[in-house]
Length: 148
Image 1 (cartoon, rainbow, N blue to C red):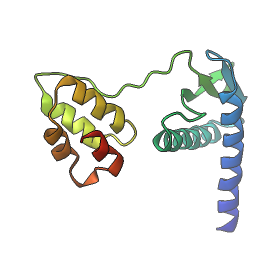
Image 2: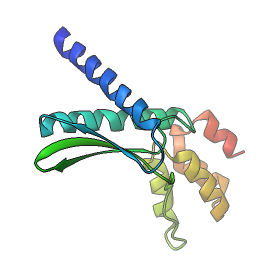
Image 3: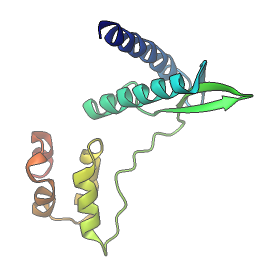
Image 4: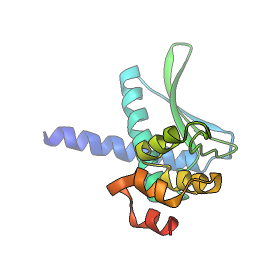
């Protein structure tokens, strides 16, 4: 059990090092890391995505904001690729005025883009009470400030 936790900590340190290196890249460039096995690449990719999601959820503008992690292979060799986008695009939700319920359902399910969604929905004409009702008990104090 102790070896497993130590291995996870080591992997976390390694992926954090790669993410910080990729965050210093010029936008539009990609960091390619060769891997021995596809399973190892998948583990690092999932761990990296988790770290990026956690950072984006905690901070409006983190150093990892705009990084995209994916697996690729060249000539049979698996690579972990960390790309820094030219343009950072945050997609909050799709507005369909005929289906207001669908937008509210998206708002409830999303964990990481709720602030952007709330602002977008307010600009689209949704009532503040309607949004509060959709969020229910999962509403945070910061979101309450937005809706006042």
